[in-house]
Amino acid sequence: VAKYERQSDLLLSTLRSYVAAMGGDLRLMVEFPGKAPVALEGLGDTDKPRRRRGSTPGTHRNEAPA
Image (cartoon, rainbow, N blue to C red; front, top):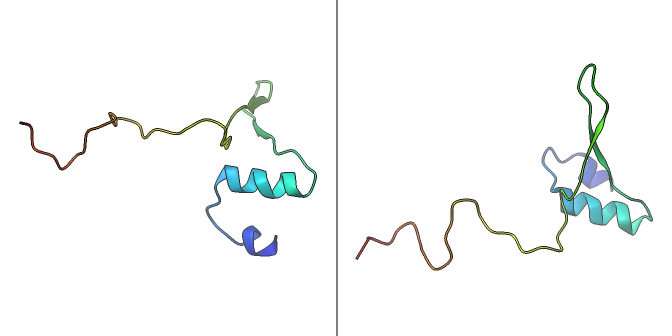
């Protein structure tokens, strides 16, 4: 755990798995002045397949148009 505490950039999914392995639940809250706290849901979930933004399946950036 100490090794991961020193990292400047940690994936939420990785942090969630470490917390879960210790029997905990990771929750990410955002607080703005004068507003109620907001829980960010679904960040770091690995249940759903991920797609890169802007990419279309079956195409590549380096391909020239036909």
